Length: 310
Ligand code: JFZ
Image 1: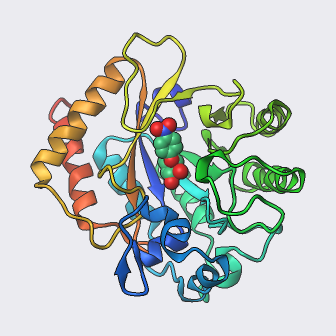
Image 2: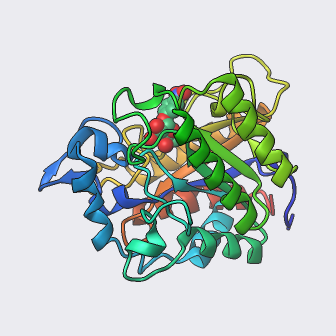
């Protein structure tokens, strides 16, 4: 085993989208919301932050089991796990002093899913990474829900992000990668966040989506590969289904063996070209992992295991 090796040794990693949207599973007021990804149901189906906020009262990560998630990752042949600490909905899946809109405060269980996962990763010899959305559809001083990924960041919102990133890199042990996602930052904002990460954790790798050239690895468009050999560190993030990253209760499934073959092909292409393949699961609201997704990951893992301990 390769305990706490560097980011470039990960090769194959698990992405987890887990948040309030997982509780809705792509359904609002009894209606499947077909537009957009299910983790963005606030903007496509719910529309109002104060309605969405109420979901927090029912959110109970009672089947969140980071040890079994780590075992699933290891069975798949993965060497790291990256989880959503905060998605565009602004709900924090970790203990933060910056807002009460966080799982430890609102949920009757008062658990910190991110903390539990970081400890389980350490115990299981897996690298641990954090996804952090730069845009926030809940923070009052941020831009309103509008153009999704292209919103710019107000000065107050930027300060808020800086504080949260500081917490994440101070309280959650070694972080192998900080997966910043979306927003149109000024070069100064990107630079400040980039240097904050490295001042707190020099080994932590920063994703390309921080913008303005401040990154340690490039992120290809979803499910895409570079068409020329790439000398700079890079990653392909992939979802099991193209339609969503967050849990969608009414998702249709193609036969498992076909999906396993598709993911093995992509994994081999990415790793053969020197990239990191970050394959996503969308946890359910209670924190459990969809059976189909478990089967797909284990299917890829048994193919890898056929060649011995990868
Ligand atoms: C972003 C998020 O908006 C989305 O909800 C999910 O978390 C995903 C992993 O990241 O969506 C993107 C961002 C960039 C591209 C595609 C989806 N892209 O460059 O192809």
